[in-house]
Image 1: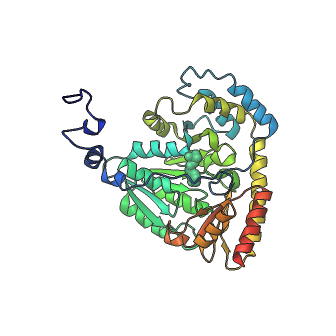
Image 2: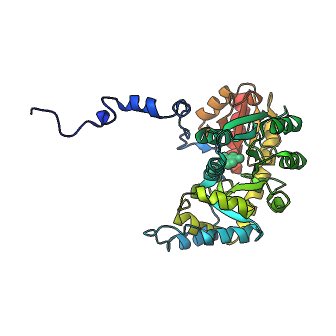
Length: 375
Ligand SMILES: Cc1ncc(COP(=O)(O)O)c(C=O)c1O
């Protein structure tokens, strides 16, 4: 064959002779190029205690209700853009007042993204305690918002004087408070969160991902604070696979956030599933209470191990400090038990592991392995 091919190589399709790598370097923001994509650890054949999932399957009757609902979904059609039936089911199950509005997301991760992009004016600041849920600062970075982290006290409580000073200095448009906090597991004092709500000049998101395992909630208190949005997810209560999060706030906030939402962000199977799953919530409360009981047993047993500090938890995981987190993590992994090594995430988390509460059998295996490794 002679002459140039009529089909230019994709490598050369950009400007002039630039390669894809050169084009990427030219146009993709440097802070994005500097990132690594989030890697979800492979867990096949492992006891999975790394991702705060509920270890229990759906109870039989709930599973049957879900299966029946899903079998009728018209998957050839786009989902209901407003997700009205799913929202109504959540409102009913959670007793959400008519004076508040609800927004659904593809997991609360998507809602964090929606909130951040709606508030990311040039120069705007996002503020959160640190260490906390990593996706807050990641979303600030994606949206081009400046992130200000305020270190927690050594006992993981909110450092209120430092929070107050940072809020006055930075005037953040957006504050995130995980209540209870991930990865530390503790519930901040309600009075400290109220103080933040009173001084913050913009929106305060109280992220209650772990509400089912905690003793307190700001959901009934939204009417008291015009700047409060409560964020939740169904991921930790047995439904991580359906990817559903919800935000509850004054209608004025939700109306603006709704403009940033993709039209069909919650798929039809998830919407139908939510209606079936939230028709009653007794099963969620029962499983959560079993997990809380196991958490207490796990905490007590871990406390008996040498050189191990167990931090109080109001979540479905336990944060522990051990002599050598990497050695313990590797040792557990060798026994096919996967936990999260959070050493290196923040100085306050030195030699810490985050262990999700599993079934009694899984917890027994974990405890036996930890005891062996601590010898
Ligand atoms: C505090 C907090 N918020 C939000 C999320 C995200 O949950 P979802 O599965 O709904 O995206 C997590 C998950 O770990 C979390 O810990």
